[in-house]
Amino acid sequence: MDFSEKIAELSKKVKNLGDGLKSEEATKNALVMPFIAALGYDVFNPSEVVPEFSAPIGEYKDARVDYAILSGGKPIILLECKTLGACLDSRQCNQLQIYFHGTEAPIAVLTDGNRYKFYSDLEAANKMDTKPYMEFSLDDMDETLLPELRKLAKGKFDRDACMSAANELKYNREFKRIMAEQMENPHEDFIRFFLAQTYDGKITQNIRERFTPILVAALEQFINDRINIRLKNAMTQQKTEVSEAPAEELPEAKPEESRIITTEEEKEAYYLIKSLMVGTIDPSRVAMRDAINYCSILLDDNRLKPICRLYFNGKQWRIGMFDGENKDAKEDIEKLDDIISFTDRLRATVLKYDQK
Image (cartoon, rainbow, N blue to C red; front, side, top):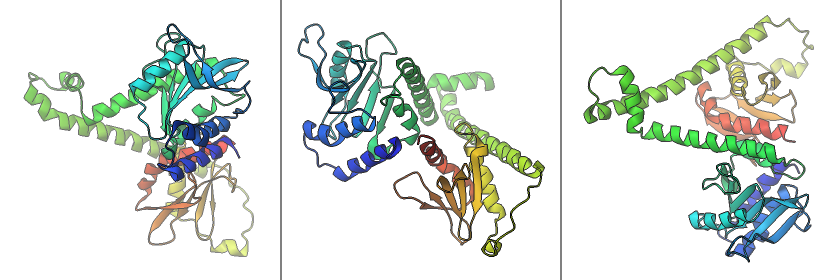
């Protein structure tokens, strides 16, 4: 079982347990220890994982963190555990900060076995940041974070690389949060910035209120336009490459293959999915293989690496997804552009194959 499959198993376990874990100890045994094991560390080897790790500092002589993951005899990751469903607020964070100061570990994790908050000392050396640089819940796992999580696995941990990734993740996370806030509820300075460059009159409160919904709508339209331009350019490029490519000698069709008809809609969907992979993998790795009942979109033209399946033969179009536990999970779509809403899931599927 590879790393992503182990995390998927844990995700399933969290969902099945529900409110079944009533103590911190039960949470540790049922969820946290398996999570550490999924990272490749032997939870029963004290040279790799130490429970109740001593982290004394100042007046806290007996401070102990629930788990410390070691490498070369030194702590690299601290984990402080709470009961499943417990509040992971500033009080628990302050407790973890004390432990962090008392060791040389660069990574500290606060968890209830489902939610995981990852901290480091990006702002000041040996002083744990107040905000996590990465956060996820196993019962709703963001699979795009799996490559970052994998960097903490046994044999892959590199302090400098992890610190660099943590720094990037932290600011990426914050920038996206701020942009989302401005899209929903633009700050006065944000509105004034645009009005100062477009409106000639005096910028009063009434003017700001009048133009706020217009600005929000313009931003949303701008983002949608940029996405559409990028997709159209990528699709045009793909079509050009196909049309300009030298004609290949295709194998003579077998009798059953004569019943296979690749429609223009399937081709359009194929080009669209290739364009959605830009920035994740080389789009040239995306291949199409048609069949009688569906059209497969594959990674590396490998039938064991399906990205999705297109069911366009009936009145109701469907796309079969392979990112979750249910393989070929069919989702209804009305038009080709609906595929864009599955971008994150399609990319997560591709990344899953590349991690194996």
